[in-house]
Structures are given as structure tokens and as C-alpha cells.
Image 1 (cartoon, rainbow, N blue to C red):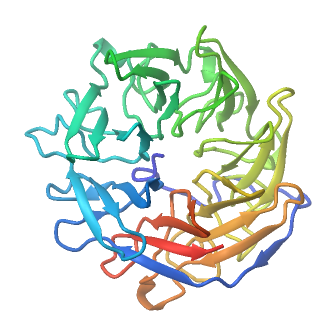
Image 2 (cartoon, rainbow, N blue to C red):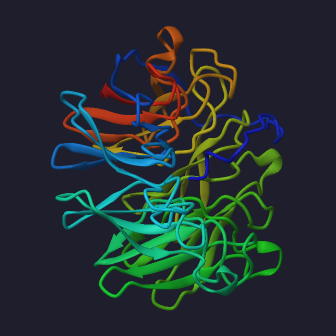
Length: 407
């Protein structure tokens, strides 16, 4: 997700006078900082979600590492021992990648991910990390084709479907470098990258523009979001047939008065029994973003919760995860504690998908000097009864944390 270069402007959308679907409660849960980033050649600013591989947590940092261009790290959640597995920009001119913002996926003992910069053209790479050796291999450098028709700047986490990796780029494609973005497929066995769809193929980008999140696979169809484009320019939910490349806009945001239906979705979708759940950064009743559902068969969108009604959080960037019927995620701002940006220091929240009831599980910066972390951007993951996640800043050195919470 493209958070490092996004400037949030609270109030850019007007507030709507609508009735909230859900209520908000606050649950008091103690936060444990498992690791604080920023010491020595450690990573800095973890923006992506964590990946659990046989009890070890792996993740990426946008900055830091030996060359201050980001890193891959491994963390023992029991002891807090952290190891930088790979520092990006280890090679001259960074052909090995730079500034990773997406998460990692584990496919048969190798971790796959992307960087939004670096590579032979400077527009990002798709890489693999061998867990047994720590060796990083660049599998594809984006913008390898003239005018970046193969895509540029991948931000979202990859999806593995029967050995083929699917992902998105925020820029590039056949419609111009700055215009649209792409959905692509990559075959690790052949090294072939294939653009399935280039956004902004329709006039005024009504088909979507700038996908920041990855796609999900539901019964052979790919579903995703775009942060811009659509009938109002405020983002879309789309479906894509990976065989034919046919794209269909299921919903365009901000089609209701004052964007009561939400605007600018930067998170991926979550499939819960055939219904798609996700978040928008802006819009809703209080212009603090939303949790929404979408019926893929009808395109009907429903706002489950509107953020911004203190102290429930503001500006959710991250995906929702389903843990035994309860959904969890984070907000970049809001919460009980005051910070200089975003109307608060961020939260972890849960939402009941049936009732829409939201609970604030934790409000960050509850401790002096925000040593417990501040501004979580990524989603949380569930491991053995605990939630683990990252904060962009805060912690002992001010460059972010890995935290755990009991559910």
C-alpha cells in the first residue's frame, strides 16, 4: 500500500449526515512491544503485514537496513529476537530492489514479495528469498518494456493461485506510466510476466485507476480495489477473469451524497462466506473512512461502520482478517490518545460482520513517548491466540514496532 508518499488531508471530503449502522465499544487490552525498529542497521518503518512461517514472523521495512533502502527481517515472537535477513540496495544502483511496502507470501519454503522502487529501471521488482540461505533473487524488474507497459511500482501483497503469482502495480500499463496501473500474473518457473489488465482503459478511468492493494482469488475470479478512478474518481471494487483478462467494475465509491458510502479504498478485500469485506480511507458519516461489504453477485455495497466518531479510529488503510467469525484490522489515526497527525495515534479494532458492532481493541501511544508504537498501517495476523502487527513509527527508537495483543 502506498503510504510512504501519501499525504492525508482530513476534511477533504464533506461529512455526511447519515445514521451509523454500528456502535463502537472500547476493550482494554494490554499491548506488548515485541521489537522496536531503528537500532544500528536494523530496519525502519515496517509498512507491510507480517507472515508466519513455522512460528517465525517475517516482514519488510520500507527504510533502514545496511543501506537504508529497506530490509527483510525475521522475528521470534517468543523472545523478541530479530534478525535482518536481507538489506535491499546491496548492489550498486539497487538492481536488487528498494523500499518494499507489500507483504511476503510463503510458497513451498520460499518467500515472495515486491519492492516499489529499485530494479534495472528503478520501478520495482518481484523477488524471492530463500529461507534456508537468506539469498535474495530478483525474478522480474518492472518497467522492462518500453513505456512501462508491463507495469511499474508494485505495492500490494502477491497472491498464489496454483503456482502462479498474481499482483498489481500502481502505475504503468498500456495507458501510460502515470495513468492507470495493472493486474499482472507471474510464473516463477518460466520468469514470464503477463499483464492481465491495464487500468484507465476506459474514458476518464471509469474502470479504475491506481490499484495499491493486491487481489484475492474466489473460485477462479480475481477481486480487488483501486484507490482512484471509477465513475467519481474515488476508487472502485472490481473483478477480473484471469483467463480472458475481462475486467468488471462492481462498485464505484462516493456515488452517494457526501461520500457516505466511503472513498479511496487502499486495502485488499476479504472473502467471508461469499461476501467481500474491506475498508476505505475516507468517506462515511464522519469522513474518517469505513468498513464496507459488497455482494459480488449484485454489486450492492453496504457501510458496516463509519470511522471518525472519537475514539473509534480514523483512516483504515489495512485489510481485514477473519478470526473465527470476528474481523480485525487497524486504523492509521484516531483512538483515545492525541497525536499531531490524523486525529489520534491509531488503533487495532474488531468488527462483528453480522451486527456491525466495532470494538477498539487497543489505542496506540498509550505509553509515554509512544514506546508502544504509533500509526499502524498494515493488517494484523493471528498466531496462537494473539494478534501480531506493526506500527509505522513510535517504539523505543521512533522507527516503528512489532506488537502483540491478546484477543
